[in-house]
Length: 346
Image (cartoon, rainbow, N blue to C red; front, top):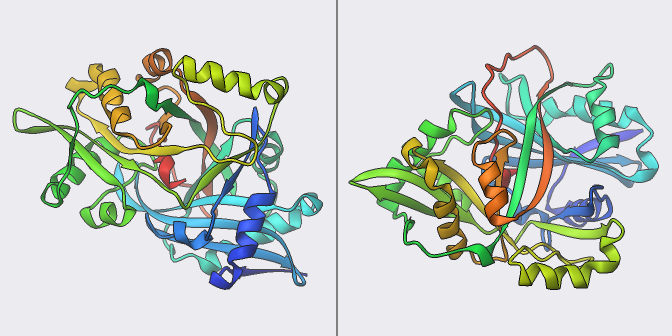
């Protein structure tokens, strides 16, 4: 019999082991870890909770959920994010574990009137995609929206242009209003308030011209959350030292050694007035000059107009995920806005 129970701090070692021992395949096989304490990364943006599945006393899997303040069809509301779905290899051929796990979500969630959740699956994770996109009986319905391109920009390509200034506490109400006006153009984008922004612990910045707010962003370093390299595809595995030498000489992001985490800070909560969109390169260069890590990580939907220039100018590492609207009971119609959640809260 499989049981599903809400994780508590007493389960910290179990949660961290399930994340550490279940890697995600791609050109780099990686694990998304929470060291040294899983719960250090909780409740920075909404309500976070995790559930552990056990066969008797043996942990066989987990999932994590976050109930987040987001925009859906242009309106602020609470939406659930389903993440960290992990099943130990010897139990992955048992669809019953997944079905019962999904069925347990309403028991633990506080979202009673929101039938729509969202999730992200690595584009290269074909086994997970085949299982979840099949929409098998007893499973929630996964509706693909669009791809999200996560780019790790090299700090070495930064240049201080004195565009961004640190936001003060008295700026935050105006900054959040400005951000929300732009963020509501995307599905699953954050709905910010000063209280929510403060809880993240991120450092917020703003750009003003002629007394008006023209752009905002945050630099969000998250030492409690790691992207750890576990393996590289051939021939990169053998050539990693040479690649990293070339990357440093070419002002690109060096790749972490096996067992090491990518040194990154998130460029989060970015919004830019239309008249400043043509200055995307300068805005990103200035943000990179402020970045404390080797890489500054930004997520944009796959048809975002900034992407071509970003790729040419900054030569980032990229990672593609597929975004889905997940429906448990009843259909919610999305109105065609591209989905662009904040990658820092996934």
